[in-house]
Image (cartoon, rainbow, N blue to C red; front, top):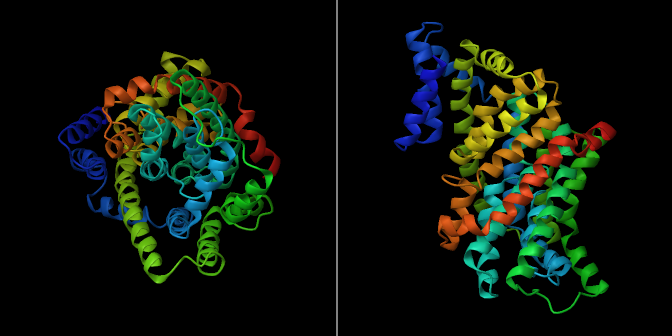
Length: 426
């Protein structure tokens, strides 16, 4: 039955069926052929999948991110990032990476960040002499930082489906996010020197200019700090933090920058409803497939199968990493988290790995899969906006693929990189 589900799901994807409907329809044989449960249970599972308090964090953070984007926050962050790194070799590439780090505390979505930066910085990078392929590679790989920095939507979904503390996941993502930012900046520096890409600014900005820009951006930069302080002192859960940050974003927009009006508010709410509709449809459809797999004891069977192959934790993790990278090439990040992680997590926990450590590694890996051919969502988003061929993008991405491989090896080998903050603060 599990093989039949996998075959049906693959066939539905190949014929172009939307992922959400492919998830639900692939599980139909379990309910019809086995008679394990009446078909009406499918509807009940779809409804109950939405009845979750932790899941409320998703709409709150999506709305907070969209509100920040219409209040002038993004413009101020671009200006601040440009002053911080625009004087380095490959100035605008460095700006894009630092901006992804700062935007991680706002958008929470790698695809959203890649799309925004491709439109915002892409044309300027090309005008300054960057090749289209190099521009696409930098912007795409930088967006993965957003998936690790709180409030990452991917981490919320992972915590929800795998019953892992979202607060601990948020704290665990901070140090890997900083480390990945440094790794990508170093890689961009080497690429810039090799290709002769010039700095965006002629000189290092003065302390006065930096302070002025920092002061303008402080309301956005305080965004993730509020999360950390809130979790450390138990002021709110992840869901309550989302609600608070919506209120915070409204106050910044209306009373601090005074750039938020009713038209922009309507735009932010409309965009949030659209984004949420896509995510929630995936969640309710994945709940059906998840229940079908539970009936068929999929996690237990897969765990038993893997342990018959090897009991070496390193080999088990390597096998799971390969599965995640391959699945990430074909599925959007949220669908991957909802579909694949409930299957592989019991295998990893049984092998002795910490769920929080694995959560950061898995979510980052899944987003990395979106950077790779043949069907990487982030790759196609950036390449589509900048009109770049997949082959050219892939060749330009080779230094970044190597950098990401180093990052993943260190993250897997050094658990303290992810567990230091959650263990110290929670």
